[in-house]
Length: 143
Image 1 (tube, helix red, strand yellow):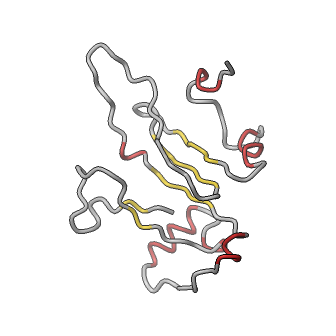
Image 2 (cartoon, helix red, strand yellow; image 1 turned 135 degrees about the vertical axis):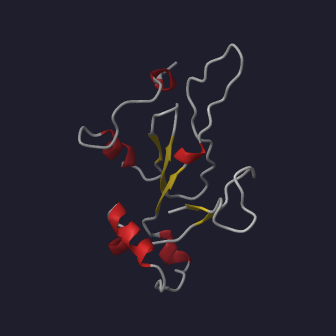
């Protein structure tokens, strides 16, 4: 889980460009539900440490990333124009699944899923999955 350091670390203030984060990791048993993560953060130190996995162990790990960018939204105002949709720009080079919570428009929340594993999209699009409707139908039209 990426943790925003703006206002939490010396010199990292709101008007700096870029992403300033710390990325703690949880084992499966401590991160199955959001409440599990909140409980571990509220408990404070001491946190457990494990050795960093080696190359081959990492190669076969199931790693996912979720980050919340919804607090960074600012409506773009240009005379004579209307902001229709804001979508995060994210360079993903690691072979992991990721999700970004963000604001596509004022007072709306959405999730951008980046699926690296085959079959992940089927779970998201299933009737009982988290996907409800696309943000902007025209984004997904075939030409």
